Length: 290
Image (cartoon, rainbow, N blue to C red):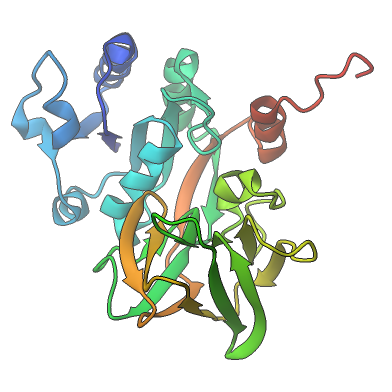
């Protein structure tokens, strides 16, 4: 059994949990390697023979599992390294909310035991593929959570003309528009009034950001469709984001999104499920009548 450990930022208060994980892996004779930029931040320096830092090295190492240390943002960053390998990810939450990285620090040893014993399921998460002309984000033109088109550095709203399979849907007069996957429905889209969607649903959610129209509401569209956009505003520069990455675009860009050809595989330990996660993370059920 081989695992790859991915993290972004080392924090002093997390050192005990990182040490606990490494000690557990060594006791169980589990082969592991660590993301090199993360390992270099750890005070107890880790031999470079235990490190790797690129997609090609990860592909050659071919781990059975990937363990992320951080929050949901850490998983989103790990995906840009994993790309099309579809290696199952187990997220240990050292961050805040943690919809994706849902395993608490206190469960690290239990989680490794369940991983080793096969006591888990796999949740396959659909993704967004961005097709832009001129090109954006190079080969990392995919997202697990969402794509957004937003105004930049001015108070004027923008207009996003939206088409589904080249058929006109709507012109959004707003600060921006979010195209979310079901996984991303608990992120930025939720903050803007979008619905929570179960991860296995095969949809895109279009959620406007501060629309200047009382009748405009979020809408769900099957991810079998291709969605395209034409953007205009008082300036010709706008912001396009894919998960945590961003790029400046202009009104000359042709933007299209569709379902990505590969998915993200998340490990779900026995006893865990999406309904339990949203109850715990969103404090559902905190009613004295329950």
